[in-house]
Image 1 (cartoon, one colour):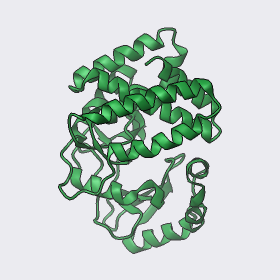
Image 2 (cartoon, one colour):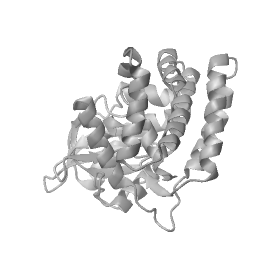
Image 3 (cartoon, helix red, strand yellow):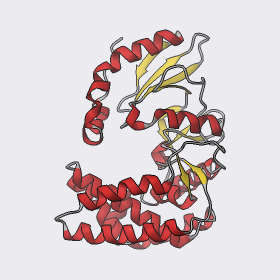
Image 4 (tube, helix red, strand yellow):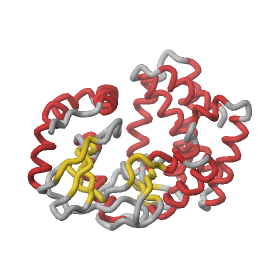
Length: 299
């Protein structure tokens, strides 16, 4: 069968990784080779799929359902492989093979169309937070994962450039960068973090009800990981007349339930919302940018 990348993937890589054109051109052939090497039977390409990888639903030679995932180097698939191996299926999707082909992962099949986001909001937050807690473990002693300081350092430079000429965004960037400096001065712990955790990254499974997928792992404090979850369903928050109050309550509830310092969670939520908002401005998504920066203004 043809392995054409879904439009969502092509569009997302065009925004964030314009140098991925060569990878996209080679993707159909690379997928055919990965399937043949593992003697897999293809069911279908997952559509709309993710924003950084091609996901193919397959069966192994013994009939076991699995997922074949191909990602460009920019998405750091080898870092994802290392994190999944370290978690060993605890709280996250199970890695089914050690490294065979760079940039190719064979994973346990979950229910790709059923995420925790399908639950009512309060229940979704509870289940997502419980899943995230299981991922926060000591990193391997010899790990090569990026740190929160390193990742946010790269992002800080892009934020300064991306907010130039926009007084409102520049003011929020200044506040976010000041929060980052203060937070990095004395991190309370160093754990292996998911890195890009949100409700849509938690899928229904067979071994346990919910398992995390698609990490972009990083090592640092837990509040950084939890911060992205705070703004889930941001469109609903912005549309609500009590959105700001709801956000503050969400920060308090999540901080208390996961034993994270509330002010540190607020600070990382501010930084990550502003970073995402400025990035949306930079790639030509003004509506997304407006939502995220308004949200950040509440913090």
